[in-house]
Length: 86
Length: 445
Image (tube, rainbow over all chains, first blue to last red; front, side):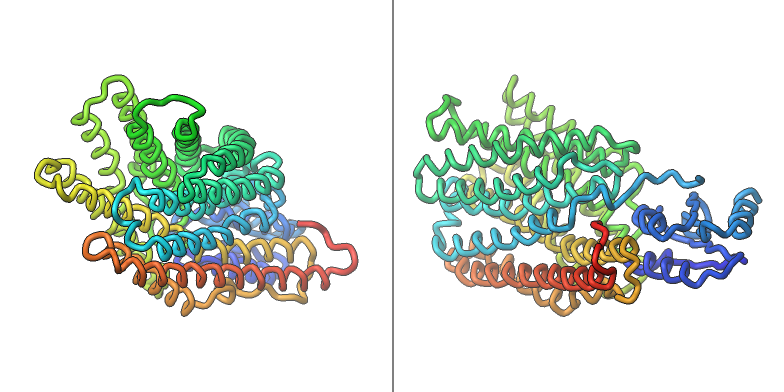
């Protein structure tokens, strides 16, 4: 299931905090679809440490969208690839 | 793997490296204030007075360059995935060298004892040589050339030129070499220092800091693409004209074009602040707005001075001092504002990263706002701005106003130091708690 999170109008460190908190609440099969106004370069090293998969691309309502899923959740990853292709 | 980001906080220096630079800067601000208190109105009689030269370098080297060098060491690995090689050693040596070098310069100017200049020259050479090597290696190795990194390349080059010229002037002063009339050398040194190093780096960093921390739109692409290139190019042409075919008229035109670039940047930044997406109260905005308006006014004053220099002949010293003071104070104010965003953020970010590395989830990392209360930012900024106003009035109205201005400047810098020290103290406390919660063998990170 897709969980959307719009952090595009928040000041640091809210976008990072809310994203990390939302990741902690992901259920099996869920993926996070984050909307942000900038490419969140500082999020990526934290995501790497958390052991999640992610993909960032330009687009979405705010400028950038980041898809995040638990690295061992093949179902969620499949859904992300489906969203990206579609 | 779909993502290609190549960033790792392990590549960044330990937080104590940039933080020692950030914490030392307000102490030199304090020294600047004490110099003003001691020398009083003598400071505002001429830009060549020894006390004024000491003050200028306490601010440009001890405050501004101190923060800016520390910031570059942190930003290059985090923003561009390109760490400075041997950053711990380079940073440690540079920090000590800048303290000794700046103190040597200040003591040299106020005592007229050339041996202090010898100390300054040696310290700055020992500190900056490895720093420049490491910096340019990191700047050249970046994989993606953003406008910020390009601007940093220009700024780093400008710093090299500034320090090189400064050393030549100093060596001539102590009789180690012959330069002839020092004035054009000094003017070139200070132009590369302010219009080049300080201006270029603050603009490049603002491209990141303003949209990120103040939730504004990005700077326009055309500005990010051309501003620093234009500025650097103009500075080079200005220097070559001055060296090969010194003509005041053409040099003034070129300098006016360069300063016009800063007016453009200032107006665009003010416009971005107007377009903030969320109207949250931001205690650092006052620093920014006053500084940016100050820059526009300073350039206006410079243009008036250059265009009407004959009619203003009796007031030229006042104009020069006023313009110089506005530019220096504006730059220090912008740096002050940026520190209030960068230092709490870096503390929070390093702790988040450490928590994930240690898996110490029983300890919660404080929210960024918990590191520094808004009321302290506001009070310190009001004190600082009041001192700046009094110092400027001391130049144009009555030199005696330098005393209350300098006193407030001392207090404002002490307040800034305390604010930053408290942030670092909270960082150390939480970092210790994370280590304890992790168990006997914490992972270094």
